[in-house]
Length: 118
Image (cartoon, rainbow, N blue to C red; front, side, top):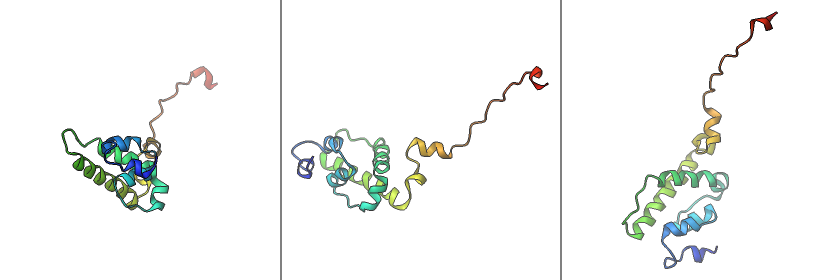
């Protein structure tokens, strides 16, 4: 999808265009957010996942399109900022990273038959 198609305000609302975006760079272009390529190359999925987590707390019903776009931009800037200041492993956005530091579950004691101890 070309940047011209993504940024055409007449084609669809910002949420529709974000849903059709195919890369992290598309999100940054659509919302006009500046970024360091090095950060995005390392944390692109983490940034988008964190953005989705932040957006889950937003309510866009009955808001003007300009305000929806501005709030989405702020959310992306916030999500991106998390990974400028930290690393994907430190932020633990994905379950695999959360599980890596989760306390080990205690194992149930194994029962051993007394006759096996001979």
